[in-house]
Length: 239
Length: 239
Image (cartoon, rainbow over all chains, first blue to last red; front, side, top):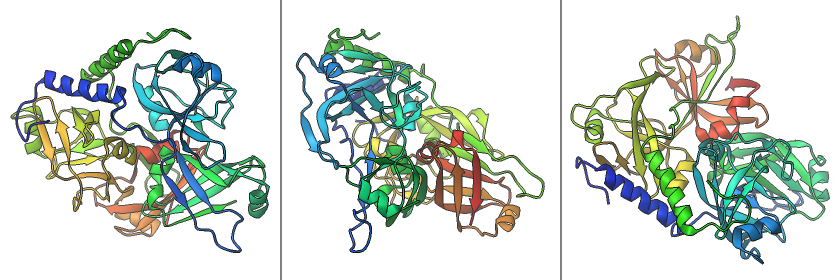
């Protein structure tokens, strides 16, 4: 596809290559990433915490209202399940959107997570934000005060979202049992220590209580890649 | 550019938009990032360390041999300076290349850092590696044992590099004064603690000694974005 060594490459050849790659991607011929691909888990041990420590990396994704879903994918559109997520009832859908940022740069193949919600939200990494030219605010899901918008393209239409684009604050989902074991309450901050070749400790991991969740830490791709979560040799959650 | 609300967007409109964006980027009409954009520094204080603690984020970049430079930019090509870097004699050049990975995905506008070296090396983040489909090895600059290659496009030609694509291991450049103050030696690992809204501590920061360097920590964009270096309220380097 590209010549060895010193052959001169013509600009039109480069442009043709670029066009081909982009067209492929637009047509979905390049596999988009699942929404929560990377994962690390500490084995359960008797006498330890009530639930195993599970850390999942959230890749960029979207939550959507039923109304926006119909604009993007046509009247009557419903989210269809690609894969269950760790929390019961939540799933990665088959639906993908393309984001167009203020500098006209695009990010294709952004997955919608289901079920639909009463707000539309785009969760990106700072790497994505810098690429798109958006100064992302750090927010807990659903807090859209002073957040920027973005243009979203679906198969059937476009939405100019006026707010709801955030970097999700790193957090840990906990039930009452988990909070009792770790001695924390909803809204507290904890630390997550990851040992390994790219070892790191993340401070300010926010506790998010819900009676029906399973213990699960969510970090984004910048954080998961910074510590190379996949090569973690040990993980620890502390106050 | 994109319709409000519910207007149906035709596939050919989307394709035209994508083509336009890509062509713009290829022509350099979208500003490529400088190679070491983000930066944080602790003020100098009397009685403190001999040199202020400076942390710089290395965006993806390339080091190049004179031979490869001539293949990419034509016979007799020299690197021209865009901007001095923190270490004396090092600079971000005006020359940019495009990377083509094994999945035919491309990353344009990758800056070459000068001066030329006796090896060609591409330093990427894990985010970049996942995007391109390259399983990046963690290496200190210049160690190319068992490292993958990549296709590099310049304005005048292409190089199929057979090895030298790495994630650079996070490191701190130190002179003798710095090592004496912190009580460490070349090759030791230190910790870098960043306080702030996305606070984190990076373990395994490798000490790299050179008699003529100025104290400087290099982390990559995944690490810089994970801790949101720009909003750091305090930084500390410890054993």
